[in-house]
Amino acid sequence: MADARAGYEPILNEALGLYPSLLNDPPPVRVGNQKVKHLAHGWYLRCHRSVEAILTLDRAGFAEEASPIRRSVIEHTVALNWLAVEGDKIEDTVANGHARHTETLSKAISAAAWTSVDLAELTEIIAEIDPENRNQRNNHLLHWDKRLEGYGDEHTLPGYLAECAKTHPSYQSAISYIEIPDGAIEIPDGALLWEPQDPLWQVPFCTTHLLMALVSVRQIFDPEPWERELEDIGERYRVVTDAVRHQDGLAPINWATGTLQS
Image (cartoon, rainbow, N blue to C red; front, side):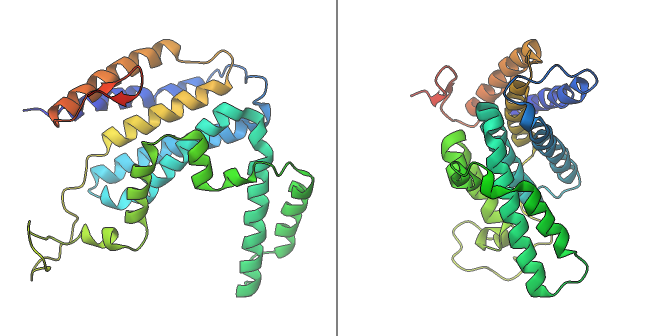
């Protein structure tokens, strides 16, 4: 029997073509987004190209090792939603974060006594940002948990935490390469694997998060592009997702509310 997840692949292929086609003749940027249009473009491309990187790794048998990229995609889709909601208001916050990072980097380079980096250039970057004269009110949104709280949803965190566990040195990052029979208490001899066990096909993850990124980035433009295309893609995405959940014995989604049906 065919896996219902195969229905995501044509949706993903179509979605991957939307933003590149826009760049040939982009619509005007909406008032209130002029200062952050470069962030919108860069953050979207980080999602888009990361999806392509994940797919490349998947085809080569390295889906398990793509966890840092998947985590980055999740972070960038939340950031794009933040930008879509707040527009130019995020400029000072992002600039303050860049200044903080540059200052921390400068201190680390100085402590390591590196001579390959000109510390004066880093000092100049901070001076150009001029964080003391920027709005500091929303600097708490530089922290992932606060940004997620305001601009993500309850479905984002479980996946993010799972990717963090595989990205950092942990039990989860190791156990993928160990074969443990069901019910075994100890790791048996000969359990060490060269390749991870049964990595998940990456197309469903990539489809979901690329669509999230597209829905956010389109909001900086006036008029917003791809209305008809995304309506069609969204309807097909819901049909496929319903079929996958039915196949897996999961409760259907009430798409009007975003909740599970009882």
